[in-house]
Image (cartoon, rainbow, N blue to C red; front, side, top):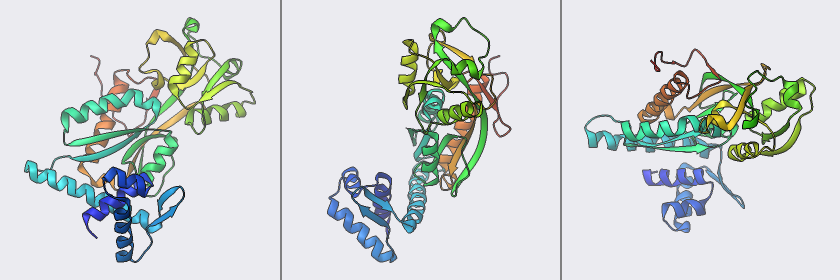
Length: 317
């Protein structure tokens, strides 16, 4: 077993396809398949299950993948340390962000990495928080922000803050300044995120608990489509303030909802393997600092930080 085999195997697991991995690695598919056969023979175990939908790791394949990622990352960091004459953060770090949170954190995180740790390449993956947490647990992401997450094996969970959901309507409704009741929201035509989005799950639970029927006009997984439809006067939506972070403040009415159940808890999820990497720890620390600064400067509103998150004072002073 050598580093090349581990790199090849890791790519197959990540792409879930020998064909796609061969294309990405610029080698012939039969050659890549033979590397897998040789690796399985050496370890005397089946590592991949091949089928019409691609190649998936077996349980032992998942174990090998987890260790392969650690070894490959350590080799990257060793090369960088020798090159610089000291330990420096280096390598590839994959960060998962839900779409709304990405609007607050993605650009500041990219700017930090480019400015302060140029030997690190950060990859930002957007998706539903449930999917992102699963990818961290499977070691396919190094860390992510996830909503109402549960503890999983091979994953460290840090509660960060509570985020309120708000009623978001067209700018023509901006004259109202008081919170809306859930019954008032139920009377509105609603455009909502699709399942399994955490906003949709919380919204449906709140309406069921209050025995209210919602008027669903449309649903979509694209926040940009929701906001465009609201802007055109098609109805209202329910989103956290972070989803509007890159929008002009006057473009929408954004009102709190007087129902305590429409609050989601935001967690940082970190894979066990990532915590062994200097690059991942550096990005994790930067992400925590950027979240604290975003709250302190009002770049992220409608949230209540928890004790595990340090929010700097006097940033606006």
